[in-house]
Structure formats: C-alpha cells, structure tokens
Amino acid sequence: MKKNKKINPKLKWGISIGLIVVALLALFYPTSYYVEMPGTTEPLGKMVKVEGKKDEHKGDFFLTTVQIARANLATMIYSHFNSFTSIYSEQEMTGGLNDAQFNRVNQFYMETAQNTAIYQAFKLANKPYELKYEGVYVLDIAKNSTFKNKLELADTITAVNGQQFTSSADMIAYVSKQKVGDSVTIEYTRIDGTKHKSTGKYIKIANGKTGIGISLVDHTEVVTTPKVTVNAGSIGGPSAGMMFTLEIYSQLTGKDLRNGREIAGTGTIEHDGSIGQIGGVDKKVATASKEGAKVFLVPDSGTKKESSNNYLGAKAAAKKLKTKMKIVPVKTIQDALDYLENKNY
Image (cartoon, rainbow, N blue to C red; front, side, top):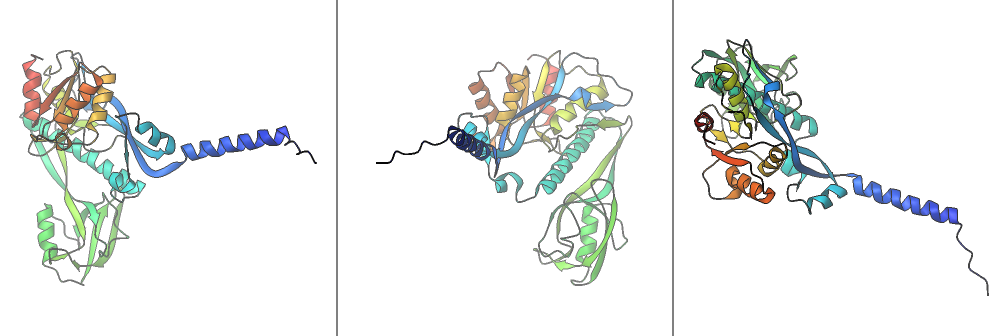
C-alpha cells in the first residue's frame, strides 16, 4: 500500500496566505451600499467672518456632520453591532445620482444654506441687505429634455434666448408662451464659475405647458455691509443652516448668546425663518456629545413620530448615550435666539 505524499509545508503556507488575502479582500472590498456614521463637530468661529467684527465671547457654536462612505462587508457587519451606524442602498443615499452629481448637489445645498443664513441673520439684526437675483439653479433634468447631456445639476441658468429675468417666475412665464419644438438657446454658469451657452428645443413638460425640462429654484445672493465670508471647506448639505445663522448673528450684533457654553446643533434654515428636518440626527448627537457640547439645538417638527421629528430622534439618541448634553427643540430661528438669550439653561 502506497503512502500518501505529504504536502510541501511551503505549499501549505502559500495556500493559507492566499486564503487569508482572499478573505481580507472580500471583507474590505467596496459594495454598492453606503455606510453612515457619526462624523465631526466643527467650530463655526473658524469658518464664519463678519468684516470688521470679532467674536471674543467664550464658548463656541458648532455644526455637526455625518460621515458617509462606500460600505464593505466589514462595515456592514460592524453596523449590526453599533446602533449609531446605518447602511443604505445606493438609491436611498444618492437618489440615483453618480458621485459627481451627488457632490455638486450637496455643494449647492451648502451654498444655499450659507446664503439663507446671512439673509436671516441680517434680517433678525435689523441690518440692511440686498437680495440679488442670479438666475435659476438646475435641480433636476427631465429625460426628454434636449439639454439632458448639456446641462448639469447645480448649473445656474442666467438667460433664455438672450433675455435675462428678475425671478424664476418671470422666466417660467416667458418660456411657457413659446412654441413646443422651436429652437431655444440658454446661457448658464457652472458651479465652478465657468460660463456656457447651449441650444436645444422647447418641449411639452408634465403640466402640459412649454418648458425646457428642468426642475429649478431661485439662485439669489445676499449683498451686505459688512461683508460676510463663510468657508466650510468640503462639508456639504443644508443641515448647518441654523448654526451658521446663529454664528453670523452673534458676530454681527456682538451679543453673547453662548454664555460660555459649547453649543452644537443641526437643522436647515428657511426663508421664513423656520428650522427644517435633517438626516442622521442620532449620529450628530453622538459626535456632539463626544466632543463635549453642553447644549444641542435640534428641529422640532411637532409630530409624535421619531421618524419624522428630529427632536424625538435626538432625545432617544441622548438617552441611549446616557449623555448630560441638553437637547433643545426649536421650530424657528427665533426659538433658538429666545432660548440662548434667556441664558437660564
């Protein structure tokens, strides 16, 4: 009877190493899913500068972020054991946008949040400002638009057939009077500042009227004296709007709103002064608590469901973390100011 040949130790070692490498590659290879987890807590005093003003009061206002990345098997496994980490499908996270489009839209939302924050701060402080109409932002492009492969999300349309307008309503009114199939030339500015011109045709849009096939919103710039400069780096999205407003208002008026406290928060700022809901509130509570914030300002929609009310979600997260950070609900920017100016917190 023949004896079985022993496998060469070097071969066994090579096979083992190979299997380990394959396992590691499988574990860390990116999937089509995204992971969302607590991000950073950033001081706004370093981002916001009101010309000629200096905030020398103690404490800081902070914006809070979430970290988003492509998920791999390791992070997907980790998320099952960490309640402050979530996994989302590509469609849920990006809405079908590619990475470049997703980043452009988030940059647009950040710029809009900053612009609205400046407007609200000057309005609240009874300081003069001017709303300058720049054109319309492109938020979506219809599949049947003849500009589908020409326009990009977050482009600003500044003229149609050489005509400029003072509001999006005026532009829509002009376009709706044109004939479907006729030629139309639009001028637009990219988010990087470059200027472009393209020609296409008018189409019939969903409401039966004539259009060029885009979803839009006014692009306005707030012109102020003193000038306000905001530099948030690579941070995107609209969720820091409320905190930008508070920082600008504090510098502009010289009021001590913080009373020596570290105050974090989240929430969009709207033109009527309301504070809008945001995503990932539990993760923002987690990062703010970790960085030692004493107060967390959060949108209160008034609903009784945690899924549709950031305040309830933030309270649940704070309870889970066993943090002493105070969760403060606000519905408007005036609510936030009233709370901070009261100083009894």
